[in-house]
Length: 481
Image (cartoon, rainbow, N blue to C red; front, side):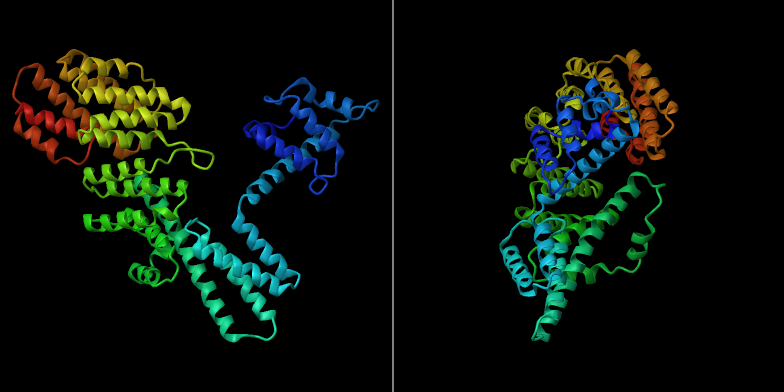
């Protein structure tokens, strides 16, 4: 049978890609082995599972080599060659969609065969086009660097030698290289900074850490601001996203960051726009920027009408929940419900039902429809620990509002048991849940006995570090004083 990794790849290809694969395999430039063409034809007869009996080793051998004694090694080699050809196809497909990379390779190839003037023309045309190109991509400066590097080589080998032009090209090449490095470095540093927040026990990358110790942000930002390239500001944006994840950001700095995004959003691809909006929102939340501002940013993204497609992955359930919960926290219930009904269609299919029911449970709780909230929550079947804990806490809050204290107390015990049995839960999460459990127990104890809450308990909850559902607990306690 076909190797499992080959089957896995074939199953992921759509019909258009499979047709392109046929053209690739039947092209003598890429493949001159007739048996591989025959194998492709047999494979396609087993679409879409690619596991039919006709693909068994002996069946194929009998078809391809009639009258010969079965030799398993021959079939295994054929499978291996087909797998390698399939991987080469994926590489060519990816490369063929990268216009910038193709033009760079053309310039390099012309230079390699000593067609220096033709190579220079390709580069000049490319750079002229880039001056009017509004789109910024991760490799924008990298391709400019590669082009300048080839141009520099062309100038060195051309006659007569124009020294001034050589120096200009060298400086341009260096500028593009540094902006490319700083953009990509900032992206990696931002990822590391996030990892350090989520998992404080994670070891830092030593190379990034070493560079950080020699880096002067003010000089970097001044360097970027002085660049003649209009896309240099995108590099500044990427750096500030990292910097404000690692360091504190005030509201004035947030507005500067937001303006930087909105001023450059027309230059980003839809996919990058999704990433930048999400990242800035995360940084804003991390720095405790007012929720109204966070909501405004999320609402602005929705107004752009960018939806998942072949180049944009589906939105994460976390992104959906964060936007939905932010809107509810600001009492924009109608907007939240409309957002949910639209964007629930743009997350992974296997998550839709759970996320919809969970969100509806939260919405109805906020609207004081406690029994309806419980009906929706009862349909949620989460497997992750934090998700299970969140659902149970909402059960508890609904029970408290319905004065069903006998049901709330056992639910708290089930949360405690979940945390106790979990082996991989981070300490910060465990502590946050345990604090919430303690204060919920206090609410239930005082409420079911009809007593006013002890002011000391309220102060403790109010002044404690962030814990699960602190906003609800403090507000509830305040009403019990």
